[in-house]
Image 1 (cartoon, one colour):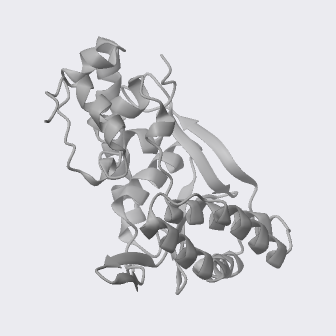
Image 2: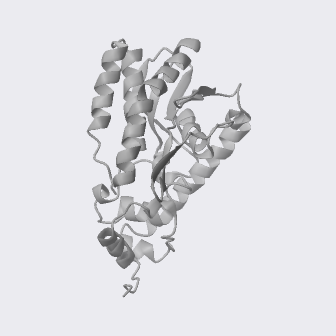
Image 3: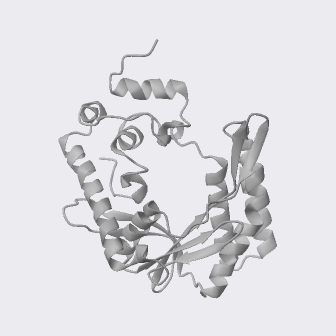
Length: 274
């Protein structure tokens, strides 16, 4: 089967529910049609790339210019996304600066970047793990960024500041719990937006203490196990669709074009709407 290991992005119950998983990873609908990268996602990837380049010794201004160029190549999905891209470009140097503040305060020494870590878990045939942003001697670090949001108004756009985060988001915890298990290291989340930077670790938040990490890991293990059980029945997606009820009202399906949506609904034998 083409599914050879479990990544958090393929088992997270919130961001990869079974219906989405079936369509994206098991069906014959090409992934490109489902992967609509928006301006914020591209900005996040660019900020992370920029931060890592500077940590590895690249000149700061040169790195920022290079990665803003890459963000500039993003093709907006719609007018709102075009506006969002401009907002992200403007915020970009501040987000990178805030990541650098963390690196200085915590003396972050990357041994590896984008290291693939894999581990075993009870009752799972396939390994579980993923790509770690920054591996250090004692820590795995996951980089997270947030950006001002463009809001559509009747007469144009307005901008909303990123939420003031007191705790890491639950799905971040599930992700780093998976990596920490595979790498056998302590997890840390490096968060930055244009206004602030926060380091989430076992010292700064209960969400990353042993009990919470174990609970998060169990959520991911049980989710992966359900998918393995389905694949042991069949790898024919139309067959598996009979065991999964889709919910097309969730945010996951938002940016998918109508033709693709119609094809997806056909997997479940939806009677086409008039």
